[in-house]
Length: 116
Image (cartoon, rainbow, N blue to C red; front, top):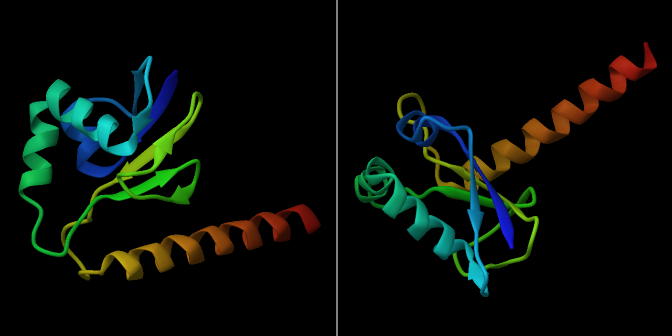
């Protein structure tokens, strides 16, 4: 099976990639993908160990919020979004709400442009 992993923020910077392909021949979970990235990119592991208490990487599987124990299927897309430093500190729930509203506003803008 092939999984596309999208990297954002400083995860993209330390790996030098926007996306990474993960291949497996057995049952795979999000945590397996994260462990693969830790082994392949030592800086990735370092970022995860430096997260402050309460901070975590937002995980989306096929544009839906997911946890590390989610089983993946061939062709799935996993997005990993690290906490953003500076500015306001948001909890994971607040961050997800912001992502939701961003998506809603984007869809609204798209609709308005289509009506012009």
